[in-house]
Image 1 (cartoon, rainbow, N blue to C red):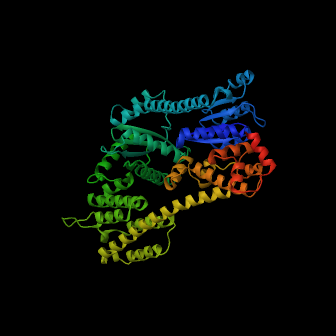
Image 2: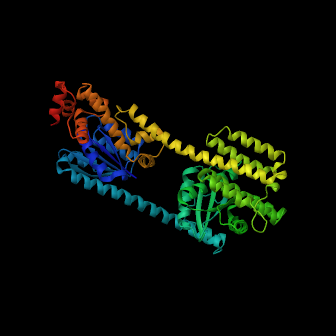
Image 3: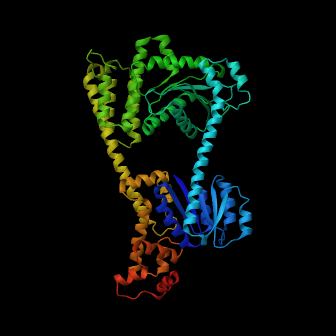
Length: 553
C-alpha cells in the first residue's frame, strides 16, 4: 500500500483533493492531510510517504523548507509542488532537491493534478521493484561461487580466488552457524522465493546476526550465520533454533509454505562443505516416511547416531515432529485437527503399531510437552480450569499413569489440548470484536481532534495501517475513513441543532477552518449547515454562522 500526503494552508483545497483521491484509489493508497507546513513535517516524521503534493507558500513552514526536511527524512519520496501562480525563483530553488518531481498550477484543474500524482505513484512503485531486482542480482553474483563450492564444483581455495573482489557479509576467519532448509518439490512456492522471504524476515527479526543466504541445489536452502559482535554469546545455538522455528511457523501460517530445517552446530568457515554433507545426511534420515514440517538440531542427531542407534533416533524424530505439529495446530488449527493429530501419533495402525507410545515417553519429553502447553496457556491468557487440568496430568505423569493407563492418559491429554484450541479460537473472535469496539470508542472520544486519521488509529492499536484498514472493513463492511466521517457528521449535526456557531462546530469536529467544514458537510448531506438547521428547527440561525456560509459561497 502506498501513501500520499496533501499539504496546503487552504483547508477546502486539501479536503477537496483528498475526497477525489480517496474515491480514485480506494484502499490502495493511504491519503494523509495537512493544513500547515509544520503539521506536515510532524506527519512525515512519523510516516513513510511515497508522494507529497504541497503548496509552496505557507505561513509557518513553506514548501521549500518542507522539501528539504522531506529529503533528509525520506530520500526516495517524490515531491510535487502546487502553486496558485508561477514563481520561477521558488521553482528554481526547489529543483535543486533530489526528490523534486515538478510543480503544478492550481489553475490547471484537478484532472491535471490527479494524472501527475498517478504518474508519481506509479514511478515510485517501479523504482522500488527495480531497486529490489538490482539488489537480488548483486547478491546472486556474490553467492554463486560459494554455492558452487557446496555442490562440489570447486575447492575452498578456488572459491576464495573467485570471490576476492566481493564483499561477504561474514568474516571467514570466525566460526559460523549453518542452517539447512528443504523446500518440498510439490510446494507452490519455489526455492528462490522461499529463500528470499525467509531471508527478509531473518534480517528484520535478527538485526544482531550477519548472514549469507544460498541456494546450492534445487529445493535446498542454506543460511550461514554469525553474530555481528566479535565475541559470541553463550546460548547462540538455542537462539538460532528458536529464531528459525518462529520463521518456519510464519512461512507456514502466512504463505502456506512448508520448509523443513536442520540447525547445524557452530563450526569453522572452511569446514562448511563437510558440514553441508552431514546436514543433508541427517535430513535424509529424519525426513524419511514423512512430508511434514520439521526442525531438528545437528547436535542431537549426531549424538543419537553415534550412541543409541536407529530406533532411538526414529523415536526422537517422531516426538520432535509431534511437538512441532501440536504447537502449530494449537496456534492456528481446530479442535478436530488436534484430535486427529493425537490419533495419528498415538493410535494403532492396522499392523498394531503406533508412531509414539505413551508408556515409553521419558520424563524429559513429558516436560517438553507440558512446557509447550503451559506456554500456550500464558500466551493466550488462559487460566482456570485449564491450569488445574494441566497440573493434574503432570502429576499423573510423575506418578507413572502414562505407563499404567496409557490409553486413558492419552484420552485426557487429547481432551485438554482440544479444549485449549477451542477456547483460543473463541478468544480470537472476541478479541477482534474488542479491537473494533476500541476503535469506535476512540473515534467517538477524539472526534474533535484534528489528527484523527487511519494513521493515528493504527498507532493507537499497534497495527500496520494497511492491515488495520483491511481488518476493519472485513469485519464491519465499511472503510475506517467512512466511520470517521460518519462520526464527525453526527457530532456536527448535534452541535448545529444545539445552536452552536459554524465556526465553533468546525473547531469541535477537527476541521482547520469553517470553509473546510462546510465543504465536508455539504458533500455528505447535500445541504449547508444553515439549510440543515432551518429544516430541523424554526429558530433563526446565528448571524455569524450565516456570514460564514456566505463567505464559502
